[in-house]
Image (cartoon, rainbow, N blue to C red; front, side, top):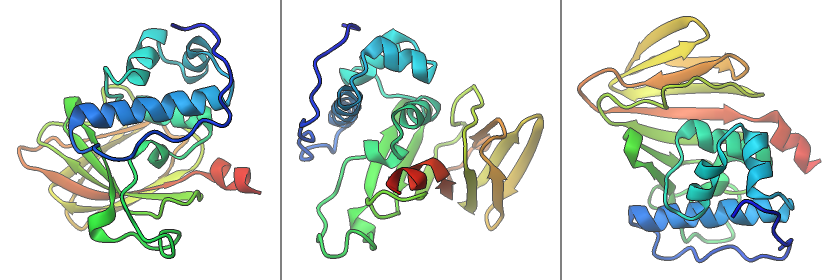
Length: 214
């Protein structure tokens, strides 16, 4: 299961249809992960070691048996040098405008049900240094118990509800209308400590992705 697998550099993307339910979304994400890993000629064990995750966790994600936490998804994306939005199912959209425009009803969505988070990509699907998301946090949900850090910057705006952001040893509480920006090299995590839904815009700047295009 975790041995070296043959290269599939010409692998085609998995079917984008019928990804509305949770199980299908997990299968889609797992297929995308497997495709990217094989294109880089990595075994499951090698990918797990590079990302700092367990072999069992990566294997379960690839088989669609488990949905990754936001932290795990970010670690995998950084290791594979792809934007986190690469794991989101595509929506039908006119090719002429998809490089620059995202319509409200054509957003790509990823549910993280076991932590109560829904992410929608509001930036166009073409690769770039900036990723923009609208995130909905259910009451009491969070990005995960562990903080994480990586290259780049993050910024955002709280649209509704209450958000707490942990940056290294500091904790900040934000309400609707409050905004933030911080270097992603700071150890960070976020949560909704309230009994109501929190909604925010989350912006990620990943310089390594922009350099990869040059």
